[in-house]
Image (cartoon, rainbow, N blue to C red; front, side):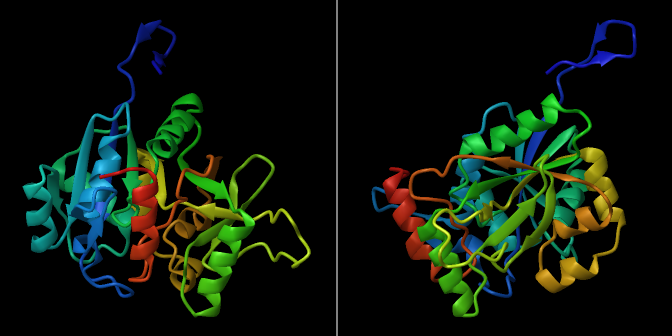
Length: 277
């Protein structure tokens, strides 16, 4: 999308898009997970961070892709498979803060920044492209993120994880304009058992931000609900920055993040179903 500058009729350059993949070694739920091997359809093992980077490389319309980390092991691994790496401070509290740190450290010149989290190798390219298109189409939007309507089977999986005391994923509720009202690691809304088509939407952990929104986020302190839920995106809502939800179709094999060691089997099965080597 080309923008007109003022009333001169002079066309500016298209908005520049960068993908940043934040990755840290010391995950509280799964230490070292960026380097855990995942087997694809042909049986070859690649690290989680490499598979997430390959997912980013499949996205169209992106000027540059970076892996942002504070860990030598992740940085060395990423450079070995050809990724651009930027070292970020160890005190970044979440992936969104690490994206802002990466912009500053590497001098990334982007109007739109995509945060493709390093534990999301099943993120389909169309999901990221849909977020970018949403921001390009509506200049007033500051943040966009995708969601998938849960099938009864997916809802059962989320509920089973909750019964085991694990956070199997994040769900979201939103208003009539598709702007997020709240995100939770609990299943929301409450759904009676008799409901055949549960109005539950699974949130995918990928975000597209305008640069100004990212800067404002970094200046703000963590919000109380962000701290309680452990969900970084709640700081945007606390600051009054809207988040546009973009619904995408459920891809083959579903979408599942690597939050716990048990998720590896699910993700590898999806990689095989999609024939990703």
